[in-house]
Amino acid sequence: MRVFTALYQRSLALDEQVVYWGGAALGLFLRLYVGWQFFKAGMVKIADWSATLALFREEYHVPLLAPELAAYLGAAGELVLPLLLFAGLLSRPAALALLLVNCMAVLSYPQLFSFECPAAINDHFYWGVMLLALAVYGPGRISLDAWLGRRLC
Image (cartoon, rainbow, N blue to C red; front, side, top):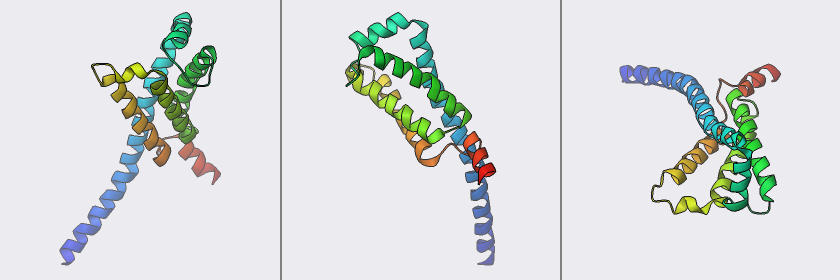
């Protein structure tokens, strides 16, 4: 029985290290991966602004916003919020704001549901889950949020 207890206690110590370092690595990976997806989309938008405005006027139907305002807000969100995620600064608010951008993208472009290949809508679903995980669990130890938390508290 003592051998089992000793092994179990060692297992718990290993669990703590996995949570400590694995959680830090996972938080960093999620922030970089999902942030990069949105940042690339923002770069595409500003690369051809006239095409972006045309898409927002003709294809995307963002509720309650004028197409031009929706285009500016969408591009700004896709460029600024990922930078916050990359740094791990204000990560929870940035993740929640990107989750809102993600939901708006899905709601304003209903053709996503009619494509034969479900990859497009699935991507938005996966990004939403990742952003929700970041909002709930935080950015992890490898972030400015964690560093500031240690320094200020």
